[in-house]
Image (tube, rainbow, N blue to C red; front, side, top):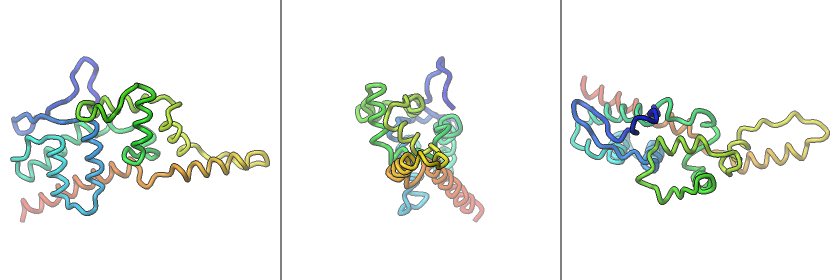
Length: 199
């Protein structure tokens, strides 16, 4: 959940009486989405790598505790209020990276490569949500979400141009689908661990 402005952003998490320092920079969280999209990694590999990315101090925890900690991390950084609220079916942080980068440069003068490791995920999302309509990424989102006008004898060229633009900017996978991959991976790991505990 996004913190009120009078509270600091989360940089650590408590689990079983111990605090673990987080590395919640936007680039690491984006890599989490990439990891959970990998089909050649098993759930345990994904879990270990994601925890190394976000909470490296948790490496000595049992596999079951790592899965529970990862669930807490998901709640803290990715759940509900920290997701893209609308347009997630019209954006993919990985596929749209060049346009997002350009949007941050244009709107805020921020070079996202220069702030890797330092720009908190929650700050990144807040800035992303507020990108102006005249940035290329927001224009692309508009193209993807704009309905086709009802055909008439005057708008044939407009419809063809919009269809061509939609084709040029279509997504291979949406951010909503990446979120679903992440949730599926977490649930899969939880069921494997539950089976190990009862077996």
